[in-house]
Length: 233
Image (tube, rainbow, N blue to C red; front, side, top):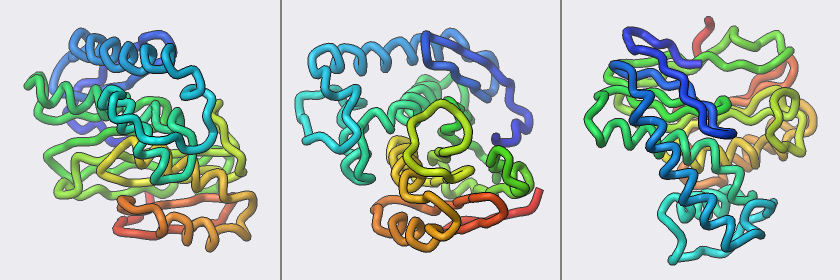
């Protein structure tokens, strides 16, 4: 979770989409409209392409797809996973960018099931929740404002309901493209079955173009790569 500072928290839920938003005021009405817009585009595409929702590997590009679906397809191909691995991150970014573009807030954080779109005018601290690991909520990432907007997405094989074929307590990925951060977190989470896989998983991360950095936690073992600043909490 990111420190709120002087921003106002708002919770908005539409079906499976449950967002926590930090902004410079109550943005619930605008956020709800943005959620409905992006969900309808994704849902209409799935209705015409039923294989999209259940695919566990990348699908071919579709230049006729809505822009939000194309972002999901591109992020999935970059990370080597199915496109629905991007859905939480892409919705968080769509809502966050929409609030910024609409002028309702100059700063915003949108959290969607542990996946975050972040745009602040000052440095931020994001704590890393890693379930039962002794490192959980004891380490965090300091985010310089020059790096924002960006996505901070986390996958876990130990907590939550998202599909993972690995056993990492947490895999946290930073990228300017929140959809890419989301798919990369899924891919890297799939790679790590035990702490012995840490070096291998970090090598895989280095092969995914567009990532800023990665932090992986398994039990009491931590691995990190990229342009990141870890801090104790």
